[in-house]
Length: 538
Ligand code: N01
Image (cartoon, rainbow, N blue to C red; front, side, top):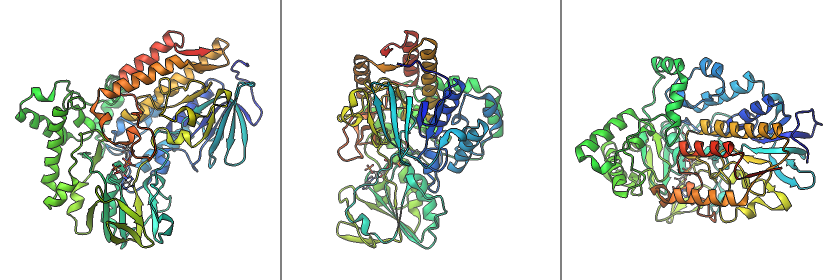
């Protein structure tokens, strides 16, 4: 077994192969270079940015506030970069990703338009053999899967899909060219975060927009605005303070969090609290009371408040009723909107409920529901992603002894800390299943993982180790702990992509870690402090 080495390597041999050039892959490359490792990034897209490269649909923007959605590793970068709005639009975040790639001169080690198709661990050589879509074969001592949590688009297997003669779009694979819906009849399938961001904009463009809703969603208003320059200056004067406040929050986002139980307050107090949070906008609403995700009765108070807001803004009571969710508030990922419900007051927008009668089939001219035909010039599939495991399982990954990841995960993903998979030595996952990932602010979570992995590689080099694998017992214990924490929350009780419910046949397992960001950080640090507890180093 060779020790990790920083020497030069042949063209196809690297110390490290990184899959994906989103925020995780870019920073991993930067850190690998800092360690003197030879590294190659393979990226399926034609540019950097990952999520923000692919999700170009109208209205796409981040629903974590701009001053908190950026890298922390470079103070110069943090100081020089200026966001323009409270919530950054997709083109600006993509410009930021490109700026980072240029500023740190990363492009030279990224191979674009190249997907990784297979990664097999060679037991004898103690190295990974990687196959790419261009026919290339590569060898690496380590592999980092920076493949993203929401990067494998879900296109439902609708009967007749191929027969459709109009234009089709998926929000997660939006074309780079401008899409013009002017004068067109457009159908949208789905009402998740991507749909609710794009529907108000598409409604302004299209002749008529028909939205097919299977499950209504809860939203809170964004109240987006130009970024307050005074606030920006305050943050930049002491970025660390903001980050420290964020680090101790369950979601890793600096929001005011009231730990008091909702039912301890009077109805009037609760209303006042919810109104205040509503007026402020964004995810802060979740911090109204400490037990919203733990106690059904507490949750009902928030749910009913939001339903009241729908009734307030939607003119037609029947439409307001259809738009009103009756499941647990915040159980599916909360949406942050701008004029979503108001859009249904427009004459050119129709809402069709497909909860009881699903979309029967796609027809050459549109689609059919309950025997009724709808004709469209374009259909937009806002149907989400095969979340958290989809991008990994698309790759033929085989670990020690040729064991397939798809077999190991047949009953759901199993990882140690969402960072490593027992039996898959020298492979790391960034924000993998079993880590807080999608329940947190993704950028700091990505950075924390990349820092952990980089420090681990450095430790191995310092201590003459060539291989690392997580113990089966440590993994089993972590998987059990992830399951236990999930069972305490109302969030695990509904059919969401968090539990794989949106993909037919996917095992129902709550995938992200619900124990909270601070607890998770502590656990990761403890593992290191105890000499990489739960890992075997050789
Ligand atoms: O996907 P989704 P998304 N027939 O899975 C419906 C992040 N994100 O792309 O709920 C009819 O949420 C499906 O219905 P149902 C964020 O984490 C972040 O919108 O399964 N409908 C649902 O309404 C988010 O949660 C930002 O009953 C069908 C919709 O399609 C995650 O990405 C912006 C159907 C899919 O909603 C995914 O969001 C955007 C069928 N056969 C996204 N199949 C930020 O701002 C599916 N649906 C950072």
